[in-house]
Length: 287
Image (cartoon, rainbow, N blue to C red; front, side, top):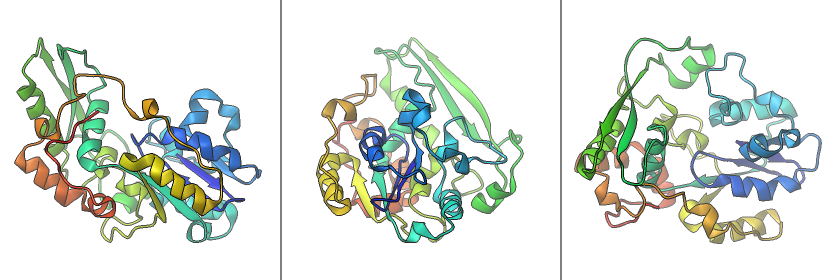
């Protein structure tokens, strides 16, 4: 999702699973100009009438889900913004986004791609895995430009009945990560793990964001941000950061990852790891 504020001269880009909705809610009131862009999930769910100029983000050949027309990678988002303002404001305004440890984010994305179908005892798990197969969509020209190739996926799921063995869930998680390698480079939304909201080109990986809010240090970073864009300090409540309880809560990272996937994450998401100074800490708790 994205907010463009002409008065305070900032662009806020919200990735997935970073608790960005609370930040959207607090930044949105500063968008008072009719030419501002307000394209937020907060408004989509609660008050669509507060959306502003969101139509400029629409895709003519839209293969994204319902929410993704305002959840675009920078390579598509920035040209649309600049065209709307008839100016290269993406190079003039302060660009803000949120970082999260990729070793934690992958668990978030895994829950999404298992349809969030878990009970507290892990009795039944539906798992969606991605693999090469017949083309499910017709690739529009922008997709070829963005990804440099065809997008061919099929979806299928595995189900574990009456499963109390965490090791099998762990194996499922690690297979899911490694199954994402299609044509030897990352293709799917979850496979870029939010990084396409930070840079334009996947080969160069040149950072386009001026200010990162780290998920793990959110309120301290928000204080610094508020000072930079000259607005009153706001805070995100702890209960808004912690996710609802499920069978993954309070597990340690070592309960999820094996040596192969640790190496894979370090090599694949090195941009986020370097920018956020992240590392794999086997005793870190997932919550």
